[in-house]
Image (cartoon, rainbow over all chains, first blue to last red):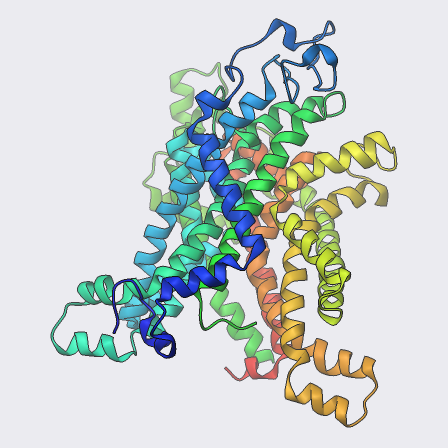
Length: 305
Length: 306
């Protein structure tokens, strides 16, 4: 009865009338925080995709009306600034438009870096878990070592060496985040490789690569989906931190972390320069975390309370 | 226990060696020329070449690494060309600040995280539970550098309760420690809640209750001692992240610690200083994880016999 759509089909035997996905959806639907996360993530993706249409202004345009007579940013509370819903930044640019465009940088880095980390993590974790022996041991010792690196310092050192750009930031974040995925996948594959269907595949002469890819990988899908979602939250945060330190996404491309870095000198006179981009980061991370937690609860039938 | 400690320390050696190799090789490929930086912008090509030869920078990477290690084990981590002082001296002057902030941050983390998590578990479904879990969700999601700026704005600038940054007495420490600790506190709250809930339903807790032990003794002797195990394990995995957070907090508050030193070093391409700060921080992580393993072995005798 094991079909492609139900990688955990065996475990779900008692509820054979309901597919694994239907069951997961039923669980997910009842989880209100997770639904909130999903809706917010959809919203965010829409905003990022439609940034040119949705942003009220050009994010790079410096408005003469965007600075007060003293040369300070215009707060949103001033009646004269109805034009700028969230106020303007230190260069007289529209803050809302910059936050909308900033969603692009955050999501691009979050999603792509995560894809890279998943690729490396699953490949190394699954290989180590399936082959075991000295190869498995060597891979996992290497993973442990990379985990002992202070994540941010490693990313800072890498970003500084490679000169920051969007592509480099993605590679750097992917290169530091894969360890967690490798660890989790390793543990799961160790358990899966003892199962009967893997043994049968081996008995009929399937190669290791084929077994990992066709027989084990589908069983890892729930783990990959959950860690993938939680990983995006983590990577959005890391990108923001790097951009805050000035070695992430480079101006003039708007990024939330970069906006806080450039706005922090004005935090006393114009706190909104810091408040809004930070709130955007927080909500994004929160949404991906809620979604990831919800997916884990929905997809993992072996979970404990 | 001594044997366990020794074994754990031996296991840490390859980790430290590996980290130093990776850092060294990465920095070797840095596009900046250390000899040029050392000589200064006005030096002639001849001078730069002479300095390159003197510093051994014209040698192959493994020779340079070997030399670095043999000096490092004697406490010589090279010379910072920006600060014009030995790297070890720079680290020594900054480390007390980082240690102070780290310990205070961990204190905040454990105090807020464990009390709110355990309270949430004991009052499951009540407002205490909902409130602490909501705070935990927000705490995990808030970027530490943003949280720090918010605290500075509200409590230092608006309310005038604390200084606007820098290091000094206890009043300087409060906001940075809160900022460094809150994100972690959120994790500990979630963890300690679920692990306390697991144990509250264990058979031995029911037995302890049934034989008439007073509630607080059941809680402290039977529930919490066992609930601590997964939390201590998590503490070990959390340290690299915690230290990353401390780096950001040092930047926000102008705290003169090792993290700030590292970021300055990267921004000025001061290679010996980058190397020194990264390896030093990695050592901090390794030493803390050894300490945590020891704590775990002390809490859970099963670990020792592994």
